[in-house]
Every structure is written in C-alpha cells, then in structure tokens.
Image 1 (spheres, protein in one colour):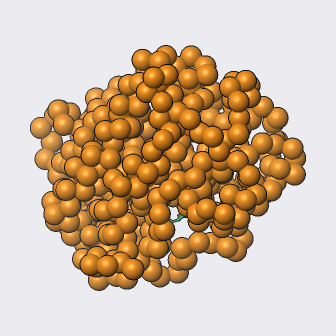
Image 2: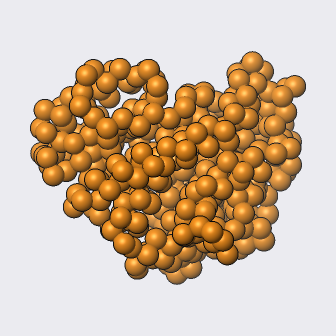
Length: 364
Ligand code: AGP
C-alpha cells in the first residue's frame, strides 16, 4: 500500500533513513570498532583466511556491488571486484578456495545471480548472500549471509534496498578490515559515520523541490552523460541506470577520465552531463574535466560536497553532506534517484512499472 504517496518509488525513497537504521541495528560494536554479522557463520580465523572478494549481482545490485568491492579493498586491503552475475557463469570462471564470493540481490530471485551462486558452489567455492527478501531462493541457496532489512520494495526502480546493500557492504568491510590491519580508531570513525548516515540521507531528501526543478530541465534532453571517477564511477552508473529505467532517456555512464578518449565528441548544448565530484584526492582533476565539458557548451549538473571549489563554472550545483570518504558513494547516489524520479514524473510515465521491465527477473 503506497498510502498517501503518489507512487511506491517515492515512498521507498523517503523510507531510506528508517531502512538504513534497521540494517545497522545491533550490528555495530563501538567498543572494538567493528561489526558483528552472525549470519556470516565465519569465525575470525576463517575471516582472516579470505584472500580475495568477488561480488556478483545484476543491474543496480551489480553497481552497488562495485561500490561494495571498493569499500572492502580500501578498508580490509583485500583485492576485491564486482562482476555482472549474468555474465559470470558463461566464461567458465576459475573458482578459488580462499575467495569469498558475495551474491547481492534485493529480491533474492534473480535467476542470473542464482545460477552464478550454483556455479560457484558446484566448483566448491564459498558464497554468502546480501539479500533483502528473507527465505528467497538466493538466501536459501547461500545458507549464510547478511539480510538487508529494507522492508518490502515494490517499485521496479530499486532505491532503499540499494542503500541497504551499500550499508551491508560497509558492515562486511568493517568486519573483514578489523581482523586485519584496520585500526580500532578507523573502525570507530566509520561507525560514527554510519550512525550519522540516516540523518544525512534525510538532509539530501529534503532537497527534493530543488532537485525536481533540475530534473524537469534534464528531462527535456534526449541524451545525457553521467560521469564520475573511482569511487564516483559506480555512482554515475547507478544514476544513469535509474534515469534511463524510468525516464526512457538515453543516459550513458562514463569515467570522467575517459571522456577525452572519445565521448567528448558528443558533448554539445543539447547533451547535459551530471557529474559526480566528491571532495577527495581527485577533485581538481574532476573540475578540470568539467572545464572541458563547459568549453563545448555542455550543460552541467554537479553533485558534490560543500566547500568544493568548482572554479567559477556556470553549473547547477547539488551539495550532499560529507561524512566519511568511504561513505560518499551512497550519499552521492540519493540525489540521482530524485533526479530520475522527477524527470519521469515530469514526462508523465508510469514510475512504478516502467515499460519492458519486471521487478524481479526470473528468466535467463
Ligand atoms: C534496479 O533499479 C533495477 N530494477 C534492476 O537493475 C535490479 O537491480 C536488478 O534486476 C537486480 O535485481 P535484484 O536485486 O532483485 O537481484
């Protein structure tokens, strides 16, 4: 029941602060600066024996999986990457005994992800699930894992489940990190950031009116770019995915650094770019790329942090709170949900049931 809300997607976006609190509840240990994830069924010795992490998911779950893999690599210093589960099985992957495989899915019924889990298990690998729906096929098949507690998600365009996936990865990264070299101080710093996150999400959601106005202008474009670098790139991918899913506009995600290797040729007054520019070691380089876009008259919407100097460029600026750098991706993602939502609304589309798409893809 969407209640007073005009759509499930809007209801689910607004539920994100409460959903975020649920996934964190009872799992943070401030004393030792770590996370407790009983469902993983791994003792510290087993956790320490993990040499590599491989995340598998489809669509938006894959993009959040990329954010999660970076988080694990950064905090636990374990090589980690993400792959589209729909491709994994078809390349006859080598399954390594000391790799921890992580299957990530809202529905727990996505058949491509389920088949990837079965491929790993058939070859003797260990796979855990990051799943929202309790008792779903992927959760049952994995046996061990982290439930996301986002609550039921109805809109085809996933929002609150993705935020909770990111937080699930943060908890996993914390636990993997703390049995290795992540200091208790860094663990506590991250916990403080996680505790502050629901209120920060609320702050972003409060910018809805301003974002709606920006979205209406973006909706007029036939084609858009979403760009970001390193931590910001999966954010751009997810932003483009959401935009195309419900607005039906062509939205392409690119690494900002790759623009000059080709796509810059497409930039013009008619092709806006939504750029993700966090306050980090790459800010200056990101801003330099924005100048390249502006020089070709490309309209710019910049999702950034307060205090970032955009060098006097004429852009539409969206500031999100800056907690801890590791948590940037999810806070930078929230305004992109609202942009997609309001573009689709402006265009009069059926937001909860976009054409050609199903909530859960149970065919190969
Ligand atoms: C998200 O907005 C999409 N509808 C889609 O990419 C989705 O994330 C994907 O199909 C995976 O679904 P799952 O999380 O239920 O496995």
